[in-house]
Length: 407
Image 1 (cartoon, helix red, strand yellow):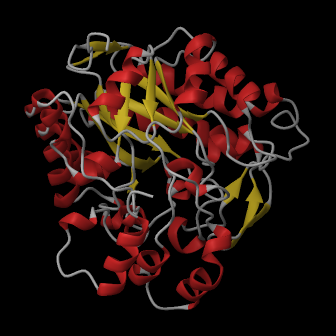
Image 2 (cartoon, one colour; image 1 turned 30 degrees about the vertical axis):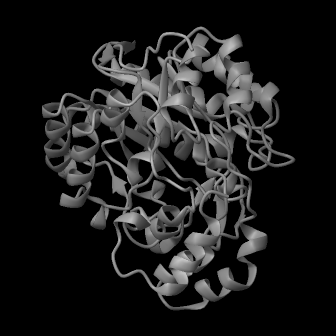
């Protein structure tokens, strides 16, 4: 094996990380009232103390209309002291702090975002379920400006970096994808038009960032289903982010939460876990009946995005962050030796916040995450946690976890 670069410093724009690891922006569901909590503080402090190069708070809506969950951050002036409390603790542990900024577009409900959800085009989101309305020009401009304002707030909160969410079927992704963008105006049709909103957002972001804060963009390499974005268009999006938009690093992901959710995470959705934590009503019943059809499984393998990501590595010059299925130091070193500057993990660090430090001591370290996705099923209703840290789980959930682990 090539000499490992895992524990060497590296830069993203104006920021230098102490090593090549990033805690991925996986939603923690630890923000009741759309504000930071002691639980969010404790989790990110533990990951920072565990040796990570940078940990990312996820996800912070840039406006109230961009909220997709009740327990999700909404970045606004009154919560900045609470966020600063978290960033200060991360810095004391020697890690950098980042926050993912986004707008969920059609993936919300009036009960959560306070309005009819909006998107590139009108339609219906079966996962909420809700009617969705097409955004007006004035709203497009206002949301782009909100991204810039959110970056300014992130700077006030002591963040070292922001991650702009342009993937996974969130709002920027909804404009990019032909699946969700059916507009006939200058924001629809050709890829150039579908990228217009992304460019507007990035112009505001880069203007607000200046030279003070690093800017990463999470994007899809593929949407993960027929009729969505494929590699050829996504490569063009990546080149545009690099050459025209000023992005300082790209995080290469894939999947559409409202259409192909397990393309993002792989494995199966633990439906018994998902419905167990849901409040009583018709929704858990619907999931029990139709969940297997709505959320089809996809097999897990380590570094499942690597084959696609290598095509982006060959085409681009800027730093790239690999994310997707990393649970062992052996595979992490392999990915870094392919030319990726950083690796990003979420489930591994939910399972073991100190995994990075353990990799320092053991060059063949492997975390104990069995990708049963219990943490994901639980996250939709309560805080994200690994089942290995939960006591007194019901027998039916233990049985489900055993059926799905290591599959």
